[in-house]
Length: 480
Ligand SMILES: Nc1nc2c(ncn2[C@@H]2O[C@H](COP(=O)(O)OP(=O)(O)OP(=O)(O)O)[C@@H](O)[C@H]2O)c(=O)[nH]1
Ligand SMILES: [Mg+2]
Image (cartoon, rainbow, N blue to C red; front, top):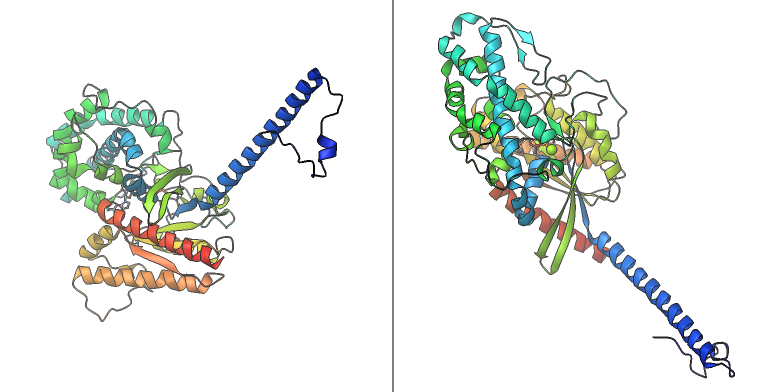
């Protein structure tokens, strides 16, 4: 609507039409006024739109998943998406089939390499992608037979299957060697030395690239990879269940059952032509993150809030990739830090000198001390509780590796459950103390004991986390 001032308005004199205006002049004037009004309205709309967008962006919660490699960041992201973005989750389901298949053939090929080295009586520090360190051991107590030779021959095609799967998964994205290059213990440090990585693992820049590629809706039973895996099923089972092979793996300290992407106990189901991927398979499948992945999760209704959006960023946790985290620290609302609790007897893949739990502590301390992150809400997941229990059951103790922990030699805690709880309590206190000592200002941290592969329990934890963030946000906005 064109604005016409009232005769009492001081602008009236300026804006009133000339008295001798011809009909043509009047038409032109009215058009000019209408054009001016339209432009005005467009500018008003744009301002309104910008205001709404800025308001909405302020309401979007920016969440970073941080932690060392294999701490469970991507698995936590999968849980978020499974629980709160079920439609997209379903669309991606079949894309994970190839990742599970790659996990299977990699485990088998790893076993084959160790067995082969053992059969040859040789030892080698393998520098290829698996980086299996085969140490010399006496061959007397390991007796291989022709049956093993035959198995090796029959399973040899799986090397080609692994290459093909990597080509498919990596095609269009970029297989990278995450363990090489300058290393950063924390994102705030200068580059440290670059020791040779112990094991190199297949990685892609983003799942989106992998999963959005042309993936058939149904398993293709005639596909070369699926057929080859199905044909090798019985031999793979025989290899995995063979007692001589098990002794060999044990001698080389290869705890395959505890490693990422382990599916050898599920071969009857997963090594078949009509294998359909379950939720559990997806959370157990391992695909190392190299690039930073961003996913939006929209909560339909939380209390009285509807359509609340979280932007979740999943980073690569390897030391060579930590510098890249820094550019995501600005305006981050929530950090979910994952510290795997079962790793106290393990060393970093990228630097064999560093104990994995100590690495996690260094990283947590640096994040707590950062001024840039002093307003960020911290949430700590003490993850891989299932593996902690399994390790404790095997008799491995934290104070054998880190003497400052669980220093209660006189205390006899025989029940694994109690020991696990005690270890978790010790760790919780340690992480809390570090926050208290290093945070630039007083703040709290929410700590959860998690097993990210247990999707039911993790789903409940994520709801609690979401509700906690909502409460903190409301409290903060009332303070403002
Ligand atoms: N048993 C067990 N396995 C877990 C748990 N959390 C994660 N995993 C497995 O550990 C492996 C590594 O987890 P990811 O989520 O890929 O680790 P990440 O932190 O994203 O690692 P990067 O991408 O290398 O930084 C996967 O195979 C997961 O299935 C857990 O609580 N228990
Ligand atoms: Mg990851």
